[in-house]
Image (cartoon, rainbow, N blue to C red):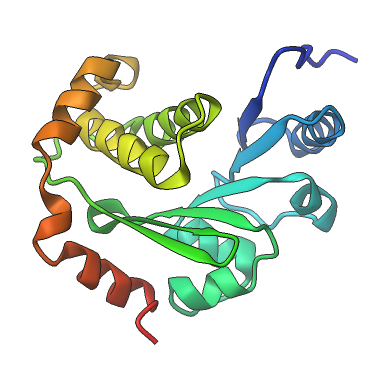
Length: 194
């Protein structure tokens, strides 16, 4: 009863630093109201089938993917073990990948000199969901989120490292990561080449 109203919300983004019963109940209520439920499964822990069934989009890093999927294989093998149709896997300096139904999407990293990775994951998740809420397709949302997460690594601190939208756009305009073979290396790293 204490959960805030979801009226007017298109997406609900949660993570696992909130008690699990609260996460599960809020996900269930959001799903009932037609809100897209996005879970960043951090810190890593196994998830109940009830919670998994209420999630529309799962965001995990490589270690979290292994825990949630109960798989010790490569990214492709672990993704096969997760029943959620839309899963995003962040891969640090490699970039990220996603499964959107049967489509596999690759987003190579945007090269930066990392100073502090604090808040990079939270920045990625926030920008990703904000882009989706504005109607951006998954590929574009991943690209925007990757740029924002990369920029967050170039600054010290948490809130102070989060870039403004104009900075993300400027980073995207100057990025040429997709033209130098990074996508092929990312595909191989994930195990999508077979």
